[in-house]
Length: 334
Image 1 (cartoon, rainbow, N blue to C red):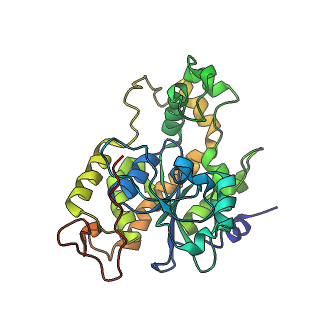
Image 2: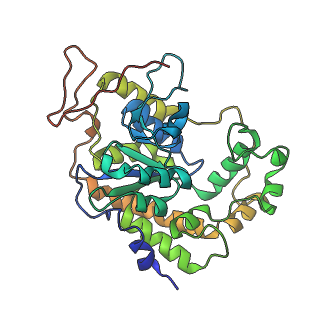
């Protein structure tokens, strides 16, 4: 039987949270569905303009590229500059294998990697190009309700299911389609089968030792902390980048405003059904909230508004650059 220590050995290409930051470290974002991930990705990509590895990198036919490179796929708002991506997809198992075959880690092209598969991405990284895990968590029942309403309307997503379009939350909670302890399963690497307390122990160990944690319920403090921890500063056009960042924090990039459906109250039958499906995730989330408070001390020696410290502007006239250099994103409007 595997315990938490064995699972941690399967994440050896990710640095422990206590290890000192090094500029060669690669931030790895575990994207949890309906937990503020789109907002975080947009702040990192659209506002900070960092080079990302995600599903976007294989758009416009780049999934057939033979060599690894930075690309600027379209698809964003008209007139907005396209964001840079590495031409791989780190959000699918096939894409991770392809990225490894293209020597993704040693290329050093990605500033950020986005994935739901941390155990597989561990094999993508190398001892000389190690990853640093982080994510943003949401209360499991709130996330489950949001996921239900999302799959009812999101015809553009692979998770869309027309069968549930007219279901109630109670019907969903009783069905085989409802998620069961999604986070505990992802972090203990057991997508199917019955969970035990051991899975929860593994998940807690993984989070405590490997993750910088953030909370949807405290998104501004979360982004501030991530910017400090990863030493993210503005280098493109700081005033515009700050406007972009504040707008995304204020409204979220994926608020699903068209779906203003009623949500069950805590203690209701629907809520209790979802609690039953998320027993381990609820205990895990309570632990994460404690860890969020504890991890504040990790960056307590770094100044507030770190994003503006030694900021430079490669889009200004004259352009300025940090001492270590910076590849200014290409101006390529959608």
